Amino acid sequence: MRRTVALLLTGILVVGVSFAMQGCAGKDEEMEDLTAQQEMDEAGALAGEDLALHEQPDDVIYVEATSREFEDVQFDFDRYDIRPRDEATLSGIASWLNEHANVDVLIEGHCDERGTNEYNMALGEQRALAARRYLIGLGIGTARLSTISYGEERPFDHGSSESAWAANRRAHFAVSQ
Amino acid sequence: MQVLMRRTVVTALLAAAMILGAFLPAGAPEVRLSITKGFGEKVIVVVSLFEGFGGGLIEAEDVREVLSADLRNSGYFSITENLEFVDENEEDDRSSGSIDFQEWLALGGEVLVKGRLDVTPAELAIEATVYDLAQGQALFGRRYSGIPSLWREAVHRLADDIVEQLTGERGIAQTKIAFASNVTGVKQIYVMDYDGENQRRVTTEDMMCMYPDWYPDADRLVYTRFRGSRQETYSVGISTGEASKLTSYPGLNAFAAISPRGNEVLMTLSRDGNPEIYRLRGDGGEPRRLTFGRSTESSPCWSPDGRRLAFVSDRAGSPQIYVMGAGGGTAERVTYQGHYNTSPDWSPKGDLIAYTSQIDGVFQICTVDVNTKEVVRLTSGRGQKEDPSWAPDGRHLVYSLRSGGKSDLYMLDIYELEPLRLTSGAGDYLSPAWTP
Image (cartoon, rainbow over all chains, first blue to last red; front, top):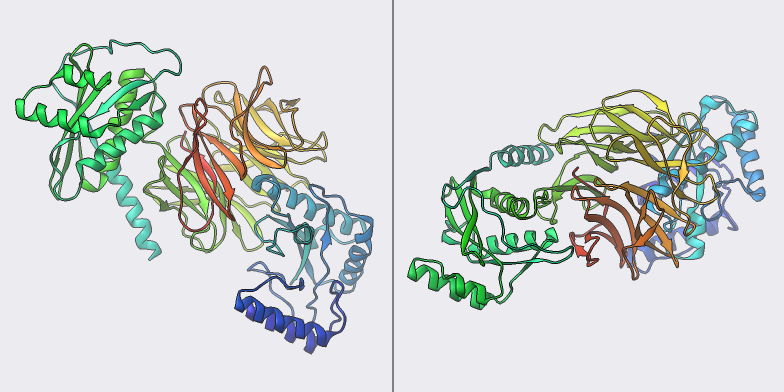
């Protein structure tokens, strides 16, 4: 986990891609938060603000020059329809993909812990598929967009609060070669 | 280490097949129990301490404990618990060289099990005789032999023989339960005895493996594995360790359910752009799509005759259980209570489907009668209960219960509703599947 964090940070500084983080201010501040979060984790105190540092599936190979982290698209409980407020995020992803024609995207569907394990696996796929359909509607080729559901297996936030659940009901976009 | 582990599993299972049972010549050829019981009434069994030598490997007390638990768990028997008196009677019998049936009757028992151990480092023999106390007669006797490490297997077999001889029903003491657990960090598939003992790992992948289901020979499992950014369904032979791929389509490859005859599989795929139910040959092949629409179709299971299937669909706006012909066609909704009914499993003995239902914010285990749509709630209290799976007797269920941030497996007799916890190790125990 720590290695992933360091790696992503280097990527941000070197490549200089502007990070689309939820509700955070400057880059320096983000880094400070990150250090604080690490220390808290190690002290066992835990639970800070969310950082967009997702675990990536094993076989996704990141391309240095085109490395890009997108904002997650979120969903209401037990729903998989794209909310109007997330349409801009998806449009942004679509236009970026149009400019980087050699890049594919793996769309991961995730759920909060409250549903049953099995049904969440199906629901996660529906969320990934809904995002995929939306991107296809914006002209992205079907072959560039694959989906996988992790159900409730890989929560973004391990807490059991409304805000944790909301953050976990998501479609996450992993850029791959 | 992993190779070693697999080899141990193979050895243990091969040896398991070698526990031999033989009727003892003693006793009348065909004696019936002289008592009849109404539904729900239990036969009272006295399990005496077995005689003989355990070779320092097996304690007679352990044999009695396992046998008593098996008989109690079957649901047909209650076990006399005042062991002081039991052991006193046994001592008297041993010194007199005969069985004082009147003394045993006085303990309130109806059936008596006496036995003998003979264990050397190389070989185990367990002999047992079952008596009808009112008649003062032996009902049957049997001898089990094999290697000493398989003594539990031998006792389970004795328990199942007692159940079958006395009730005509097949016992569950020799059945197994497959499940997924993250005890090693990544979810893997494991198998254990029905009572939670003898847990062993089946998959030795470094990737997440979930949703096991059995082939009818109880020696092969199908499961979903997460290979990088793909889901795949795999099958693995337990005694051979041989694995083969069934499906690896884009999107979902999950909830594989093997048909009662073992030659076909139902599963959920999303390769056509939506989670739908598909039917395939048991070894893979081209999937045939059974459901169509924009809703989520998931978690299929077979009816015991293989002619129908149950599954979950949110076509009416919330996840509910539906039933349709195994060839597809019109589906009939069977659950109408509540707004979240998932993970159906069809009883091997009839018309009940067990499932998970959200009631007052908590997931509980229920059954619904396919014909009458009558719902019976089986669990209560806090803790999320999920994923029921029927034992082959159609009477017991295993399910997972999440409590205190951890999931464990519990067994439930649907006529008694007293859950018995089967697992307690670190980590989560999920997605149980009882052998058919």
